[in-house]
Image (cartoon, rainbow, N blue to C red; front, side):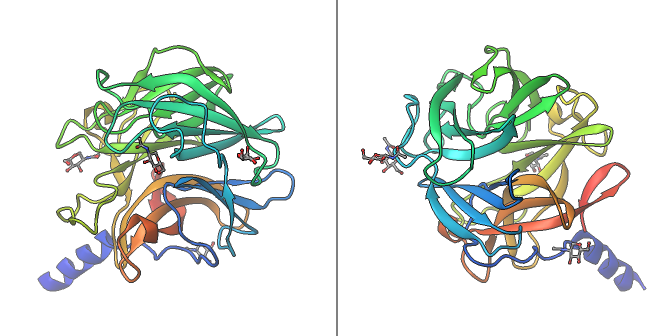
Length: 318
Ligand SMILES: *[C@@H]1O[C@H](CO)[C@@H](O)[C@H](O)[C@H]1NC(C)=O
Ligand SMILES: *[C@@H]1O[C@H](CO)[C@@H](O)[C@H](O)[C@H]1NC(C)=O
Ligand SMILES: *[C@@H]1O[C@H](CO)[C@@H](O)[C@H](O)[C@H]1NC(C)=O
Ligand SMILES: *[C@@H]1O[C@H](CO)[C@@H](O)[C@H](O)[C@H]1NC(C)=O
């Protein structure tokens, strides 16, 4: 009986479904997925050697790689403008805006920039450069991993990686941040403070702040201690502009965060996530992961997604 109960507990802890189907070009890294308004087709943006655009007729594929969004780099002068990261695309009044980061691994010499397009296609993107959110090695934040949301009549950008964690700044318009009044939304006081890749969405009465916690990459060089690899975490708030807590009520500015998806079976280090309202499956969480059957290098990461269900107002990957 005891061993049966033990088995049941282990089974519950590991009860994540396999990722949904993916066909065609399924490599992804820090993916951001948006459906095109005009025809419902899916566009995926990844951190490659620049921002790789892929498209498909459904989230399951077949995915086709189209090329880089800004093949000639960006006019941003901070970081490395020929190696842009962490795209975040949204639609406002006929135009798609893409925020991106310019930085170098482990450096806080970073800036967030923006480009726009009316079609999402390869060759359609116009760069507008920096939005006024930059950091350097004197700051306790890193201005990478942008993520846009509208709350009421205002727009905000979440950003941050390591150091003091995830921050939010209000936007004046799509191309410009309101200033350098940054609100801390999440901070992990432990270890090396390794949370990043914020993605916020609204559902019913709350704003949900997802982020990735743990070691993102380098798995082929040295495997993190079990549980220290990337995983997807969530906090929620009724305002979206502060007071985020996890399921236990712990403040997310005080190391809180409830796991949504972690390594399981052949899936290792899921993260770089986003949430999409899929026309067939409803809310899905999508992400990149290392498939243990394929390889653990960033160049081998796979695009994954799962249905989200809800338990007591918290998103669950069943
Ligand atoms: C998502 O849910 C649908 C039922 O709505 C099910 O058919 C499908 O297998 C689920 N997909 C995944 C990846 O779990
Ligand atoms: C990139 O630069 C090349 C060479 O100057 C030019 O032919 C091409 O049109 C540029 N591409 C974009 C998207 O600006
Ligand atoms: C900038 O990124 C490019 C593309 O990855 C790389 O070749 C180059 O070495 C980087 N430059 C610096 C200064 O890190
Ligand atoms: C915070 O960091 C510690 C130490 O790395 C880790 O054990 C814990 O899971 C992290 N919590 C969150 C919510 O990221």
